Length: 299
Image (cartoon, rainbow, N blue to C red; front, side, top):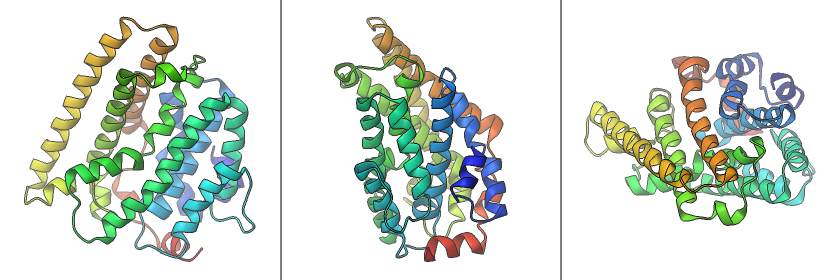
């Protein structure tokens, strides 16, 4: 994964590369997709690295919006829609095209489109995320939760579960209300848990700092009260997921049973990555150097 990222120019400098090494994105892929065939697992690891690096530079951890912000996001949409590079490729565009081409080869066409749909939602909802921060006021909690649902980039990763487990889920089963609810619960658990782990880093950022903890704390609550609020919501979501998963499994066929097992793998893998592998949310990641900032603003 690191060699691939280097070949596609994803590292701004040696320090940026070292931070990516410490993030251990490939460990996240391996833990969340433990049954994936090797070529698909490699493509997923490369995708995760590409997504995190682009998101950090142009959506999440930026000082201000620049002339490159919107072209960066529209380039990703064009790669998925037009299957080619622009005349003057932006940062990460060649890497993103390579990921999409490989996933098209490895996934059934319908499953690639599910993945691409989630990525299109992420790229477009990024505009709402940016508006939230430009507003200067904390968003309402429900507004934040709605935006966060798609900004976390979790849905595209969930659409890789059934191909990774060699049990493609038919569209009729995927669209069932209980399956959609299970996906929403996993999304919420991951995104809201990430908010509690990343709050120290995000509170030190110059602009993009709203998450569930800080939004609640802005309502004249203490930071501890805000953490407790987020933790309670996460625990409720986990409990409801386990109850619904158990009920759904009782009448599930092989593909759905495997998909639910994959959702559990994803949750366990994500939490194990946080606990054992990544340094992404350690204090070092709050310290962005001047080269990174200049790159995000000017390229």
